Image (cartoon, rainbow, N blue to C red; front, side, top):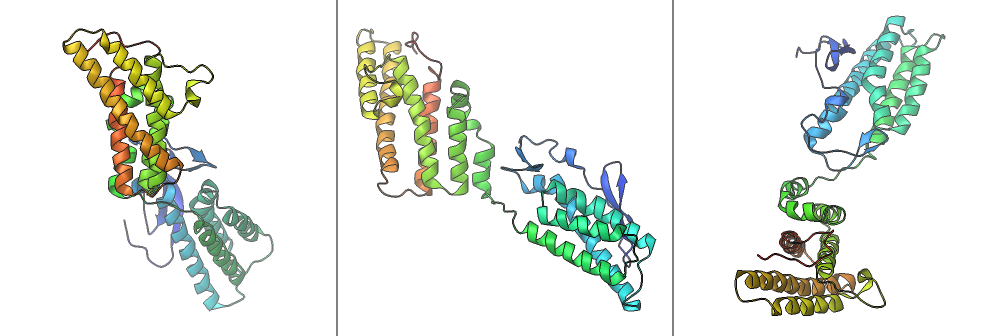
Length: 332
């Protein structure tokens, strides 16, 4: 990149996006290339991606081009101010009008629209009208337009907020491969619920994280109840209390293993049900504390809940899933 001299700076299209022409030559990525190689699928809100993204992704989306556009706007403002020093009422030349309009259109306006900067877009309309006016415009008039435009952009940018995940937590949010068995066995509900819980942990919302994890654990409890044919005469399984569901699972699990002969199959069945029931009883106490606001929870509690629920669900996933409706037939 060559160093800029004076204020000879502008935007021109090239094969890979928009670069500066004149004394500066830059090549920046255009929008459709911003996420090449990314595993993230961002939901778009008015053309602006939202959700979890890296600093690199943010820069590659359009921030680099937009920063260049703002730089060109600053240069154009300085250039106009220099002309004013020559004479406050000097008329702006057609060449200067076209250059400023071109830089605003390709370096600023397209990104203000893309980022949905409402005040800036409205201010741009006024600025373009002034530049395209058939009346003679002075450099002083155009200076006022450019300064006001820059201030409008600044005001809009101050209303866009981003949360910076701590790096270790961000990796948990992006790379949750340790949950793979659970997500395969319980894809429709447990997967999105667990991802919300992990995201809450990343955001520092420890109570919300544990809340979502208890919802994941309940999905596992229901699957285990259906495998053991647990039913209630006057209400669906989803409306039953945890204590009653766990007790019936325990009773039916013991009955199922009572007729089994000693050997690897019996050991496997007992280990599976005993571990699952013990974990469910521990989760029930945590759930009651969460739902009835009994005490607080810190980051360690949230991390422990994530780990324990993940291990519980992964353990269940070896034998059952969200579609399970029949007893397990083969052990181990």
